Length: 597
Image (tube, rainbow, N blue to C red):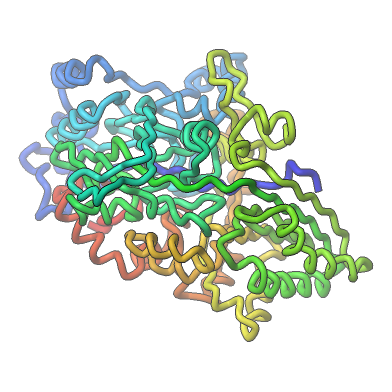
């Protein structure tokens, strides 16, 4: 297997709010919320829509940073075969370019669910005051409000027509300190190492400052273009090393947030504590618009180890035996704070793409020795390829190092005027401007790895992998994580089921294309067929472990009983806080806390 086949987990930064569709009553007097549960939204064709003078006042209030939004695919609408359209399609394969377009999103849509839409106006926010002005304007004029940072959101929560968009892309200031003390808290003699980031900061920029420059680590996502302070962290947030350092939400120390009343507030463990708890796992832009966030930093591991294994079985019997063996191998050797990333199963092939922290090269080899020996001893039934290498801790997000030693893993942003360090993982390319036919996930409880349940789990994995690729993302479960990570995590509002989960199962189907662009449409016929296979595969796990739950940032758009599935026993408290801080339901998004109202 070539090293290009490994994948850093993309725990997408999801930031955004989409106002839910509702029946509109024509007179302005009837636009008021009913008991805080329903809030109607004005559209441009209705008399309640703000007048030109209203928009002009808002424009002045935000220093001229209010503009009309054009689609980044505009050239394709008039001439889908023209050179300008070809250039637009080419640029749309660059995740950083997409983030520079206020109307663009990383994913172009989801079959039978949503597609990228442009807002009527966008505030290109640079300050919390800009955000507050937009929040107040949307509330006062009964507008659908959308919040977007980087545009990574599978469920389309950062795109909506007939809306006002608050775009935080340009809020990317980063500051580090060795002695951070949350506002209003007692210092007790010292603070803690931390990094404070603006709402538009991408993880690559945070890693560049914290790890490459400062030699520390901040728990973030795998995809370099995902946003730090948006839905990724507010929804929980997993990275390659979450078994050691916990979720993104558990590392949150303080936020600056604009609430639905337009106030700029500080939330931490010592003030606005309920709001702070909700923002640590309750979902992005559901309780307010985060404009700044402070995260703890950690000692940076000396080196990271990458283990790549590609095993092809001779037949079904051999493949099932391989799956069953790996279940036990994971339980006995990998279920700890040192290992993250994933294993993929499809047809007769197992792809192991695991990464370690806190282990030396010799220790890594000792862990995987028994696995390799087991495969080698059955050489007549398995085709086996392996690659292993170590990366210095300060070099994992250093483009110059990666280009020199592992150039096949990185794709640089070669556009003029871009930072020299700006790149994305080549393995993530297929996700850029992709159209989702289906995306479904379930937590995989550690109880299924016990010896008495090994055969049952192996059978489910075997059956599901007959038609589709099944991904086991081990860093997206907190069972086996460090005690510190679990202790911090249980102080957040994430679904408690994550602490019993050894992994998160992801089964997806993607295609390329743009809805509404002739000649560039996704193939919906093939998409529907693929979506049926995904559903059939995930239903195997729904039946086998019905109470496992799912992760709100990477979930089925049509998830049934989503409140319990996404937040478990925490949902009632989250809903209470939502109704307290946003009684009119200004922040609305699909399957977010309070959306049933």
